[in-house]
Length: 246
Image (tube, rainbow, N blue to C red; front, side):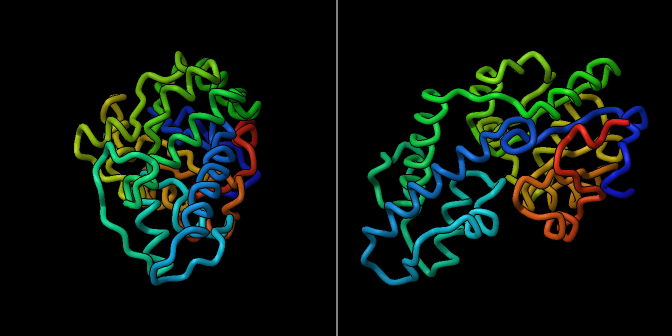
């Protein structure tokens, strides 16, 4: 299938959407929140490791699509910086993995509450089309903020299931790039991996779709690059979900 080919949606039994960067442009909010948090930390950190400024390249290589604490852990490891794990309720001022993750989450929620969010028009077109076909839909997001984002975008009623970071933690599901959350969502919708479509903008999410042997993995290029998404296992790469429609 080429990037110009529409997806044969009626060949599938369920569609699994990542949220940030696929349905809503909240990936941009996440990117800003990550940059603010990491650069604030790096600017004041006086231990061993590389404290050069955090960049968008760091986001795509180490953070994008992963559960929040995994993103912190993987980025710091890339810089040779070691911090204690900490606790889930660590304040954002704590110099721990979870403290930094919580600081980032606070920044994200502040921006979301202030600015709100509007879904990508092409994504809404696809949601309208799939609703007309009667296909069951799920959101599969590493973020624990997914329900709040869906409410803010006015799309909470479009999805039969939301498998977010909180659900993954409760059920003990591994985060992306492991396929666990996608596999769980397909099961909840009464489908199998082979009969489900995964829609992802993150390399880690595309890898999760490929690792789960899903029937079709669509990469949505919001900055990761078509080459990176294809290398991670995307069957087709589009710049906008409207391209998947005939």
